[in-house]
Amino acid sequence: MAVQISMGFVAALTFGFIFRVPADQRLRCGLVGALGWGVFTAMKGSWGEVGAVFLAATVVAVLSELLARWHHQPVIVFLTPGIIPLVPGSTAYLTMLAFVQQDYAEGVVLLVTTVFLAGAVAAGIIITSSIFRNLFRAKHVGR
Image 1 (cartoon, helix red, strand yellow):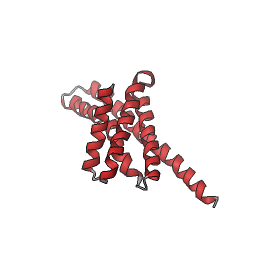
Image 2 (cartoon, one colour):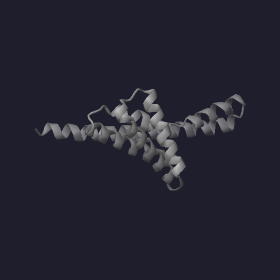
Image 3 (cartoon, rainbow, N blue to C red):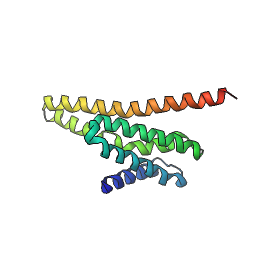
Image 4 (cartoon, helix red, strand yellow):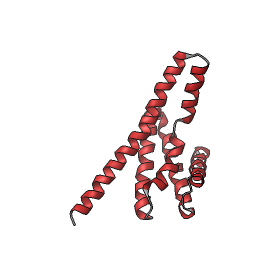
């Protein structure tokens, strides 16, 4: 599990470089990615793959929202690199491979899986973002 979490850290940190995240924030991006991947790895057995991706994406989004407020950065600085380890790229690749090899039954199964995984990532981000936006708006309305 430590190797898995380390790879989540490296992936998020690397994408922090690629996306030109400010240098003083890159380590935090790596930590967000590591925690997200760690949650996914730990919960995959009990929540299933889609449920674990949803939970991990929610954790990444919450951490990104909090870090953005604490460090006066846009949420996207932490969210984009942090969510990268959860993107179902290998499943999408296997989907296309199955269709190219004319294994349509397997291709459809993988396609549905890919759509559900991508939807779980999107849902975790959207729900968290909506909650934070409403809480933040409610906080400023009372002034």
